[in-house]
Length: 431
Image 1 (cartoon, rainbow, N blue to C red):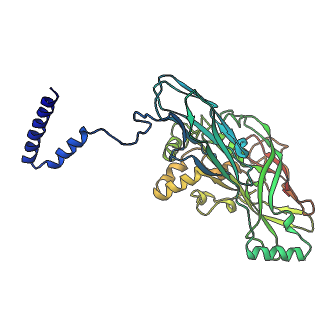
Image 2 (cartoon, helix red, strand yellow):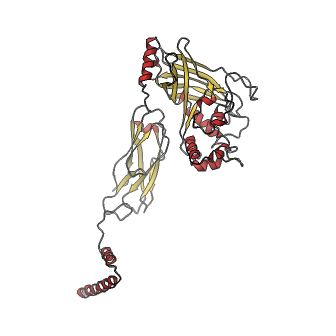
Image 3 (cartoon, rainbow, N blue to C red):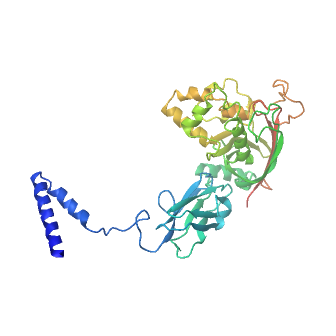
């Protein structure tokens, strides 16, 4: 019986061979024969894996480690995968440990992979705003069903803020001032900022929910980086706050969001192109965006212990800012520069498609600089803007080189807000 079966198979193969040969398809015949042979390829989680069932933690690139910048807020997607399917649901407990764990948020500490499925997903969101040394965290599976082995932990390394190092020319200036009895080294480097912002709010309630009402927002333990500005000369020391100037990153981002993506009335109003802008650059209410406030040209008067820091709004705008040309009458304000991931994408889009600028211009709230510093602060202009009286304060900055402290008080007027809002902050050099 068996020999007869193999004889019939042999006849079938020979007949098939001659037919294929007659059409010049011997190569195809070889492939057909190979397909009859059992596969010896290594199984993957998508195949019928017969080895030990393992739990794998994987990043989108397939690795188990990632390096992120201290300023990053981009979510990190982690796939939790089984190497073979199970007939029952698998519930896993996960945990973040390590020095950097406090700067990271895990979407869920419990993950269930349904029966018959291979994988699930968790998300880690960074908020590492005060990391000044390299830190690590590990994502581990701390509890799993019987018979499951964990392949290994996933490691997240957070690189610190860049440390400012003076150039040779800047160091010569620092040494020169020290020789004159002005020790700038007591003020340069990282500072811890404390203070408050008294926000005016709006009579018109149609702005973003987080900024509608007047409020006092606290600044506590914020990190600011103070550098010697390139504007410094042998006769005039000048400071630059290159990261989180006066601790305002979070508050100013909240304000701008309130004028734009969180402003469900004006920003999304019919006739504006806001939705077109959002779609073009993949900007949503929940998209992770960075926002850094920079202040340059802070002039030091060591003899009086004062700081001059106001200037034309135009002076803070980068040369590449596409709405710069609309600044015909530039008021005296605190001339911050804003480094926004949203505006980085907007400017890249305009560079690739110049007509996109017109789309941006017709989107309500996109005028970043005039939105956040709408009115001059060199004198009280309350009457000019038809605002509530009694909230203007004169801009004032102080420096104490012996204590290593800076202090600032100044007003600013957010577009259409009820009156001048006031910032009061003090910073101390970190030892």
